[in-house]
Image 1 (tube, helix red, strand yellow):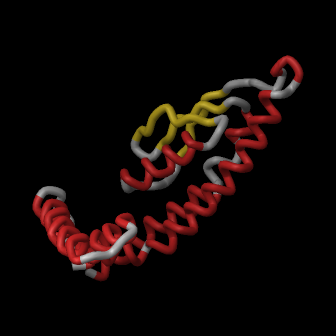
Image 2 (tube, rainbow, N blue to C red; image 1 turned 90 degrees about the vertical axis):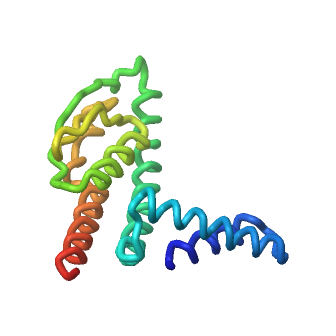
Image 3 (cartoon, rainbow, N blue to C red; image 1 turned 135 degrees about the vertical axis):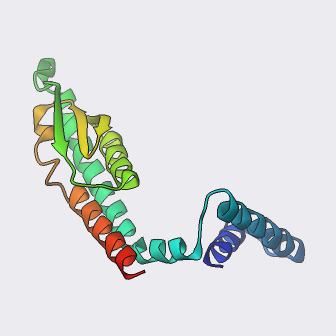
Amino acid sequence: MLMFLFFFALWLLFNGRLGWDILGFGLVLSALVTLFAIKVCGWSDRKSRRLLKIGWQLLCYGGCLVVEIVKANLAAIRVILSPGCRLVRPRIFHFESHLHRGFLQTILANSITITPGTYTLGIYDSTLMVHALNGDFAEGTPESDLNHRLMAMEETLQEKEERV
């Protein structure tokens, strides 16, 4: 039911106008997409409630990611504009993320990739292999706020599963 309400609200928000035809089509379309998600993707209301509970953590993670992207942009500009590109010293490093859920590892890997100056080359178990434009970009990645926020999300998800 939560998913149906979410899809219907999204339909109304993106449509931009309200009428009986819009409401009717939105109800039918939302029901079809919800049925598809339940039957084909294995979605359930339990998963929806769990996602709502970590929603705040996801929003905070997004804000932290934006701050990290801005900081990385400034650092990458400094490296690129250095005379003769003398600060460009590429490095490949590995670090243990301590994340066990695949989707959280993927979020971290994609966050590293969209941050300028770094690129995730691969994930092996919970170890990430990252290419950095400069060795300074690699420092602090395992202890980064992004990694800690994802670990907190994983703990929240684990607690929710243990209660069920």
